[in-house]
Image: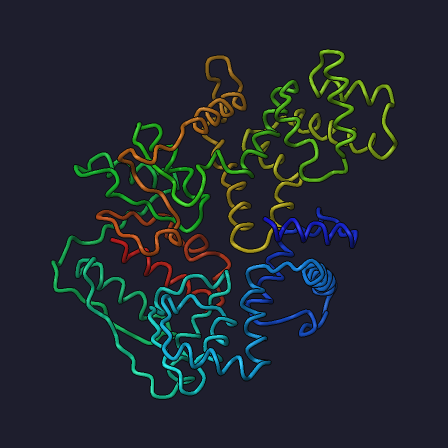
Length: 482
């Protein structure tokens, strides 16, 4: 957060529009370059995107230097540069750390590997523990190539393969081995167990995500053991929604690991706030949340004036905004910005569309999708997927009048009810998590959901062998949680 705050200050000084250049995107760019051991002077501006990023990178570096600030990637980069520059200091630390142990070696990035090799030198002794078949963090800088080239870069390396598995059954291990053998970039090993053969792996061909969730929850209801024995694993957080709905409907306790429940996620709350305002213009909380999100030029001074009028005249914020516009009480730019927001909501409310089409219009026309698409990396991609999943979530409410409620009002009531259910961490509950979050854990019963091309393996990995191999490794990790 401190790094983001500094970046925002730098971008403001450069008059960079945050609506077009998200600070999180800039943060990702800078950290990724540093993880590769690169400074602004090492980079070339080949296009407008890189040129803008470089200008922010340079200004950010200058502010940090002047203020004595150091971000996390800088700690390693500066250490590497210092040791490389100062031969006496490097020799001192080589003597001090003659033996080096590295755990989770498959998750090291480019700079960490270069730093390790520099510190070890020609005579250093390194004991590296890792599993190349479990390298699943390429999206945040990890390089599986480090463990693959270790033997070539450091002569005299002895490789010890730990192939006996004490967790999974023979059936599961055969399937996992068969999968991962399709990868070309691996050291190679064959897991085995002295344990039992185990039950056959069950495959269910679902018609859609609702059918899939129904099938899984039926099996969970039939399970005689503890709920906490069961894990539902998925590629993307957006996939949890269908399972949450089914588990909630069946009164089965569940816990979402490493993230919020679907209706508690920020991007979903943003979309719901728009929908609530469409359904009820007097919803002041929703008005406050989205009036200037994504940024549309409605500043705090304008909002303060709206609040003052609302309080003085006992009006909703929406009514106060309309009154201010009617009285021409704002500067021209602020007037047009506020008028544009009210017109947007009115336009969406007038659309005679199916509920799913309305939700799609909301996330597109308000700029929510475009806003989160600018957020680089897995987090931004996950948020966009969550917004698109919301379109699917509303479909069961289409054409249904529930106790006099419109489909939109019925859905909003449902969303409020689900969001209000607090997660009980001590209760015996089914565990929901992404495959990345499941690494290192184990469960007696594992369901792997959404095994379809474009979802898992992800759409981004198709046609790119390196990324497809990482998807296989991720699947391998999921299979061996059982």
